[in-house]
Image (cartoon, rainbow, N blue to C red; front, side, top):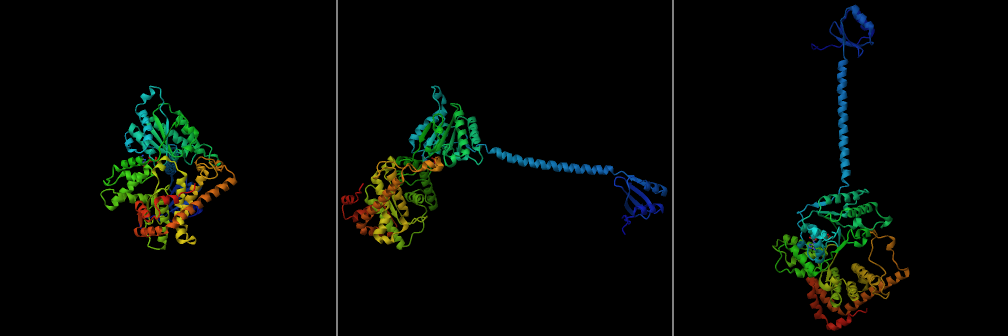
Length: 596
Ligand code: ADP
């Protein structure tokens, strides 16, 4: 046994302990009153702990009689220390937990408070690099807005003569026409900060957030006045109140109300000018467009040919153009393109140029970029097969009719190179610039468009017979029905007379009432409309068939050429048609006189 190790003795009972005291086998005792136990050390060195009574007089007396030394241990201090330590530990734990909880909840609260803050992007003064010279092709809008720049730069000139600076300017126009760019240019020219935000960013899941964001935006803007606030797509919050299915949307209406209040609230000539953009001014709430709010409306339309040339020139500034490229020609080839489309065209061309390792952007690259944008990516050409021949006849049908009909669009090219999205080939036409710019479309033009659209189906009928026609013309039929319906119900181009039976298509979610979108005519009139539309379509198809049937040989020749070349451009196509036409041009014109 190891020395120094205290040996434990078997625990005696209380009476045995008293007996052991009496017979002298105990050396000493140590009493712990609090724990009610006594530690016994025997004469042979062994120890044992025996439970005793509290205030045990018998044990005291027995120890005294046996002359065994008895010490009383004071263990109160030990216990107090232990208690203190455990209490402190508990407190530390408690405070730690509490601090953690508070931190967590304050993070949540911070996030919740941040909801109400506006998410506007701010460009401080001097950091807007756009100038009026970067905006091209929309000169009227630019001139009107020039005034706003002067308002911001020299307000005294206007206030001195009692003129009120406009609070809001509404920019109205299709997407991509440069509304945002114009707003930035104003800030850039005037050298003021530019706050911009899309109206949809106001509206949140929670009611009231939009309103508080509007308040926050105006507060920030007022601090930075003079400045410009630009709200894109204002129709997202500015739609007529109380409209739509179920009467409207609380959050949107509260946001709009707040916007109206803020616009009323900022003092005249405070230097904050609100610019907003939309392409649906008709759905805006009347309260927004009344004087004192958005009292100016500026139309930013799609650019005309000159405008497109100017926009191309702006975007060509930073790109190396081949000297051969004529921007005027490209402007002619891109009718209906917006500024954003034109900028995209040059960008696509630049990407292709870089990919091909060319030093400059040439006509070929611009042509490829245009086709990529308008028709999608090219896919591998079809092998010479029955399918390819059928597509060729279909496209030649369209192309031949558009060439023959004087009122129709001019053929730009016809191709058999397929595009992604299931397009096997296409005949591309160029709308007449005058028609496009004036916005006036004649009955003869619409009828010619219907006949040209039927060209594909007619060619299939003439060449392959009625049982072999394909569904490939479904898109064409849709177009024909749409034109026919508009002719009958909107333009008064039918025997139903000069009545407008339908207006512009209204979408119920854009601030129109569900009930109001019901037609205003009787069921009987509805049937007559359908009959008229069908009549127009049938007539267009028979016109197309009548024009193509005697030109079967010409169609065959064109198809052979197209299959061989894959693409025939407009001029070449017209030359072939002219060579093959047996009848002189007048006869052609006579033949294609459409009954009106
Ligand atoms: P909107 O706000 O009308 O939808 P943007 O102003 O955002 O259109 O135009 C998008 C981009 O198109 C512009 O950044 C610019 O590169 C180009 N763009 C549009 N219109 C013009 C224009 N008139 N002149 C020059 N670039 C234009």
